[in-house]
Length: 202
Image (cartoon, rainbow, N blue to C red):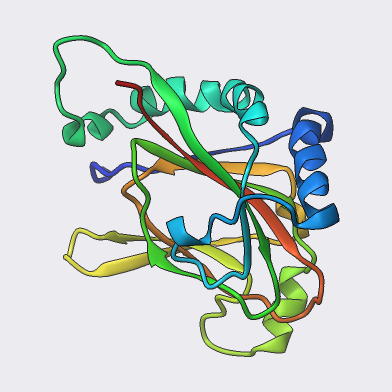
């Protein structure tokens, strides 16, 4: 038997489904003339920018299947959600883009709201190269990582390799999940991802 713990959802999108995000990211990258989002984040990443609200409707529609699926797949999710007298819609509250350079990283953290997500648009390295760069017993280079408490009360990590093979893929998870993004070392190009949070709209 397994243990009663929440998890994450993932899906790889067709490139054309994410074109609206790539267009927005390209616009920001042309001039870096967008609202910095660093003050709202813990990342040790120089370039983090809020997405224009004009893409919110498309982004929300893209991820709506996750919003509907998650509570059914992980019913224990509701253990931490207060019971309200009236149903409230779950809406996209914030979204931003990370242009992560070599050696930059996101330390262990969680997010506000109900749900969070990351969509990997461009990843400029391969895991094999990263592992060859740093030969250790457990190589975290270039990985996304969840942290949770196991049945023995120990903090446990779940490494998710995120290299070129993960481009156009989204992870969707409980906003309270502790997670981190480890640095990469074998490319001078940006690792570009879009992240955001869903909240109850009061």
